[in-house]
Amino acid sequence: MPHITLPEGLPGIRSLVAYRKDTGGLLYELAESLLRNDSPIPPEERELIAAFVSNKWWEIDHGIYQS
Amino acid sequence: MAYIKVEVGLPGIMGLLEYRLDTAQPIRELTHLLLRGPSTLTQGDRELIATIVSHGNECTFCATAHTAAADLLLGDEKTTAEVKRSIDDAPVSSKMKALLKIASKVRESGRLVMDEDVAAARKEGATDREIHDTVLIAALFCLYNRYVDGLNSWTPKDPEFYKILADRIVNRGYIRPDGGYKNLKYKEPSE
Image (tube, rainbow over all chains, first blue to last red; front, side):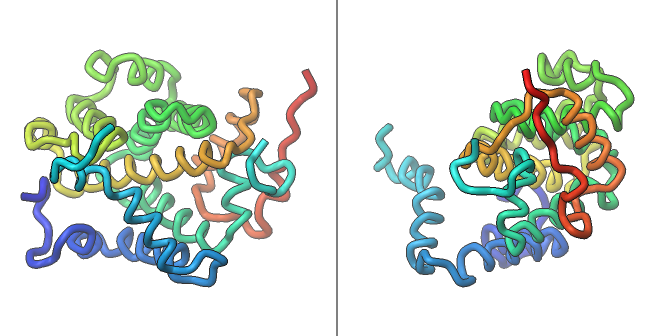
């Protein structure tokens, strides 16, 4: 259950962006620039950085993480 | 010395924001909206959140800059000092204490924020929007702190520099000045 009342039917960050569209739109704009715009690092490797950074808790939840 | 080549004379976040203008723009606009835009939290309250997060992350540049900005907005230097020492004993409202505690947890990990933390803030009158903005400001300053220190940005020691910077972010906000920082380039006094 989210800590605040968010628009229903949208998961994760999408519900937060919908809750406050002005700040949410800027977050998406930043993500688009960093992850999709021209870069010497291909998009798949940039997503790999994002996935790696986000991963620790998923591993803890699934009993995989070892410090 | 920063790990990458940034414009000479631009310390901390300033050199990084000038390094890449396309990513800087949404970061700046987001900061301006969250810290200076309409809110039921005062600008001083919001700078306090930025201060406690930057202090907790031990980002000297951001902690010093936002302490100076909060001091200017709050009209004293005691509040920021006390908040850093102990949120519970600091001279801020019970609502701000609860929100600062949520911000401190977000700094460490979003997963540490418990229902009880949010219930405590609500009991002191915090709204959904205030809780949302507290979490987003805390997350945004984690971005700043890691951006500045991850690239080892230049952190001036001269307190005067931070006073000038604080005056600017209090009175002009976070939007890029026309022509960048030409008028705000800084040279550390020789020791």
